[in-house]
Length: 327
Image (cartoon, rainbow, N blue to C red; front, side):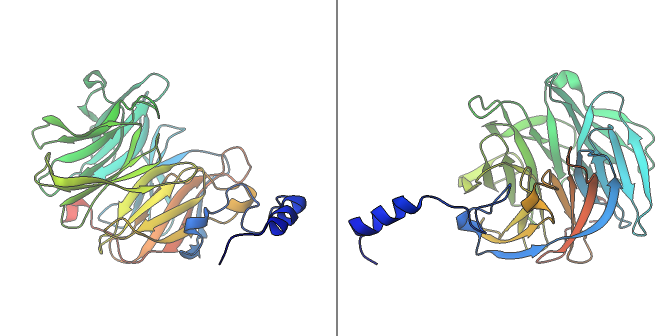
């Protein structure tokens, strides 16, 4: 195709810009992502008629879906037959990330963004025995966490902003010695480990980035092993999960969708939440993939738009990874 003629350019200028089916609506799909394999999720469970902020979705070894009611400082459990209950309620900090320790305890990343503080707690499966693992005095703002095969865990520090990258990714060894892995991030958010534990993924909420890290050991990045795999468009990469094939799925807060990437960070699909074109269900913060099958569940909030907080269901490319407690 050749250069546009002066006449054609003048005709285009006279017509002006106009919305079409791909550009109208609250959150149009960016041009580079419109051709991706796309599915629309279906409503699965209404958590509340209020616009609660939900986060931190994971599955436990019994097939229960665990997630956080950030607004109410609660960790919730949804059974396979859709019975909802509260596991634990925190006194001050707001839970946002969950992971299961190999011994079965539930680890909770919690923070208070306005006060710039946070902690990681552990509770028994029934919600008893709450104890600090990384206390507030440690100075972190933990947002999410994931266990490795050694029994240690990676966690993100949500500090900073787009021009002041003060957060990062840290590793807590089984004896709770904490070392930096990927410092100088702007509001480090989601985390995922590949099935073999050799690749670590992290989202940078403040700068719209997906990081892919090849690990030489638990805290050492392999030579030429750190790369920015993807730049997101619009708001903003949040939590993520890996599946059994090594694909990673990133919940996009503010867009009502999930982007799927292969093990090399190439986008290969997306899950859209119903109502997103009209501005509904946009606070899609997190997701979980069932470890026994390729069922994917997205937690989201409609904020102040009237449709409450809910869980949506779609099919992933592969089944999820088992929790650390059942490996």
